[in-house]
Length: 399
Ligand SMILES: Cc1cc2nc3c(=O)[nH]c(=O)nc-3n(C[C@H](O)[C@H](O)[C@H](O)COP(=O)(O)OP(=O)(O)OC[C@H]3O[C@@H](n4cnc5c(N)ncnc54)[C@H](O)[C@@H]3O)c2cc1C
Image (cartoon, rainbow, N blue to C red):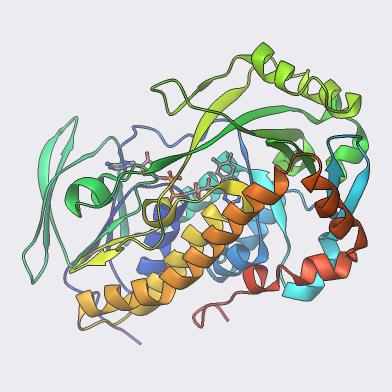
């Protein structure tokens, strides 16, 4: 069967996880895509990512699961421990149990590996043109199309498109400058990230996702790079007193913050020389995502605390729904309005769940005693079942 591509491409601003996935989904839906990225080189600094079955359902639909599995690790469990005494509070089964329950794995991997798999797929899709080192100029919604100016080192050009998707992250220029939307707000929480060689940590830690709960802080770790490296993230409540967005952290100040945590985990935290610090910001998922032929996707629309490990997953889900609704769309603004209607309640719900975890994970004594008692009394099956509404999601296009 032959069918002609729509005359005008879709412009996607930002080639992060959301923008790359959106470009692939839109190309599948029959569009040419102009993918515009500000940085000269797509490189993710050392950090890991958990990819739950809801996200992997979309990526599997794009044919990317085998490459992702080859680069990822698949923890058998999330082991939740108390930072007061190191004791186990609960285990959420993953591995074969998650595969059986959701039909897809729960993977953990390095962000650079996910980005490479997506970028390779984009490079192999002739309908997608990726322009790096590009800054977005004036954007006009003419009512019948989008006119946007793009500047790169080799000069300026104009793009005519049928829609413009802002997948440009938490500090989205499309949201703020083009759509006159809100600024991101600092959450009062900071993430410290480090990666270390697997050989430096006890073998048992390489088989699980670890979650340690302490007062005003928690710690997450898991293997990445097919089990060759170990990813460590410490999340703490504090004020961000620098202008920077991410920067090398004061290692000694961080370690002193965890001085009364169990020796077992302090020994691991002591290994990396370099920790990077991230300000955690949020964008209220309830603010408008779509206006005429312009729409937001991923963190640009609904940046959330990483406390449910779902920010990238929501961006990936957004991309699938956008692709489905744009396929054959005669009325692009109506398709984008439908995209907002279908995605906003779910993103808001997941954002709330992440914020609720922020309170629960960081409880101080004595409130933490009640939390710990509930966790200890919960069966592993029950704890996984509670995640069904997130992990069991399927869009009709990926079902
Ligand atoms: C500590 C931490 C841990 C996390 N863990 C998880 C996890 O385990 N699982 C999970 O699902 N999520 C997790 N997240 C969330 C996840 O990282 C984000 O939700 C996700 O990366 C958002 O993807 P995005 O494509 O929307 O935005 P981004 O990844 O921020 O990409 C935006 C892209 O747009 C580009 N850009 C910006 N402005 C412009 C412009 N004006 N013009 C052109 N390009 C532009 C940027 O250079 C970038 O390439 C975590 C986040 C943090 C901070």
